Length: 153
Image (cartoon, rainbow, N blue to C red; front, top):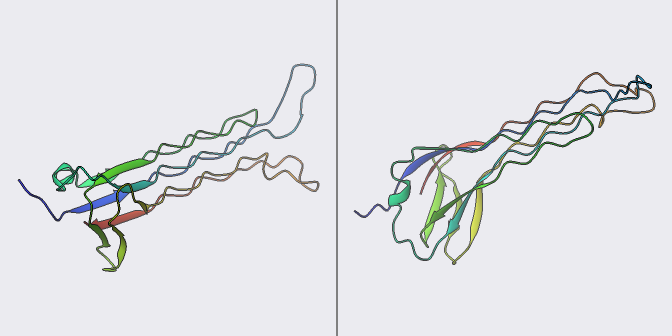
């Protein structure tokens, strides 16, 4: 079966949340903030594969969703970034946004790639916000949401 046009909803991954944590040891309490930052959410990338001739692989994937970044942890440990999702498409694929009818990218060369939906940035932990005036902040940021797009290929 030859499929040359599809509509798919892309949901990029959200960023991981920052951590609110304080360093403490048995003999020395109250050593300050040590909350780590959250990881980046996964982006959705289209890449040209010269061996493909049709979009049949995407026909039954109406929604493609990325993974969330890992939350930050204590001891200044940053959460892991989620792996990007790479979708193989045939040469000559044009990706168009359904809402704005704008061409996002035109993939014509072999191995050419384009980020269609960008993953969310990870939130900052409380160690990031420590200053001279506020040495022990009791807050951290949440991760940013990833982009949501409905595209026609």
